[in-house]
Image (spheres, helix red, strand yellow):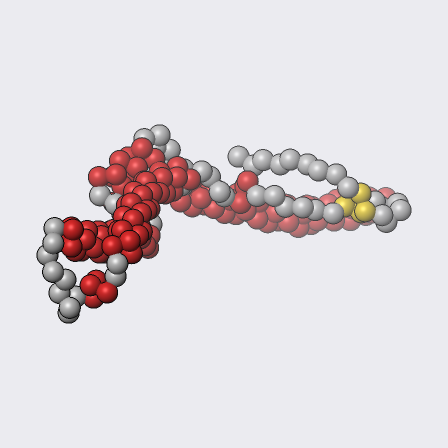
Length: 201
């Protein structure tokens, strides 16, 4: 009787062992698949990141200084190029318009001082000398202001290209994100507050 029970136990051990070994093999296969997937995800993240170029911001600023909008093209922000040219074009337009009006007022005022009779068809003949002087001052100030704004927009174009190229070098992957988590105390079921810093390589 003891021998029969010994053989039965021995037979059960031999039958159960392959079942457990198959489960372990499945677990190892699943772990291997998970590791392969993690490596694939890390490779995709590394492909998205550009290598660090310390001269990229200076190069982008130099390109924008040479030709406005070229630094934005260098950084890949093509949608900013029409904005740059629109802003600079508006500044140049207002400068030229104020300059033309100022020169017209000045020439008419000089002609009046030189004794040239006023043309009745000219719209400036209705104004007095004091009004013409005030108009000249106003348009001269507007001309200088539009020139200053145009130069400021040109410098802003250079700064934008530099900052954009500089910020493209930063790693903004999910590994650096902040994810708040609320833990509950197992015994009192009250929330426990704290902070932890996790960094995955």
